[in-house]
Image (cartoon, rainbow, N blue to C red):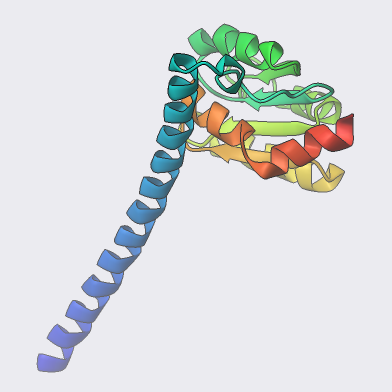
Amino acid sequence: MLTEHFESAKATIGEERAARTALDSENRAVRQELNSIETLLQACNSEAPEKAAPPRLEGLTLLYVGGYPHQVARLRDLIQAAGAGFLHHDGSVEHHLNLLAGLASQANLVVFPVDCISHHAAHLAKQLCRQTHKRFVPLRSAGATSLLAALRQPEVADLVDVAN
């Protein structure tokens, strides 16, 4: 009886640790996004407005898979303002998943919000990227903040250098 209680407590502790690790990871991602936005806001209020602009993405074509339909135009404007091309696939709500391969072949970078995409569409996007050796970035959320934070990653800057 004591052994069963001990094993149960041990399993509970393991589950609690796993949950805490996941929350710590999410907390780090949120902090990175907030730091990125704070940097933009500080630059807007300073005498260096060029730092407030999204990173320059000339020569890059970004495919955004999933997300909320009402945000697509805003995200398109943001990406195009940074000098990149913007493609969108809704993750199979209205667009058939067969279209995803053609769009992915045109993109240098594929991003998708993990909170607003079907598991099947996310899996297919990752699979297509691996097959074609393209970079994909899962976004923490469908908000513009997550996209901006992802675009500031060094890996994305490397893609821009290669594209130009």
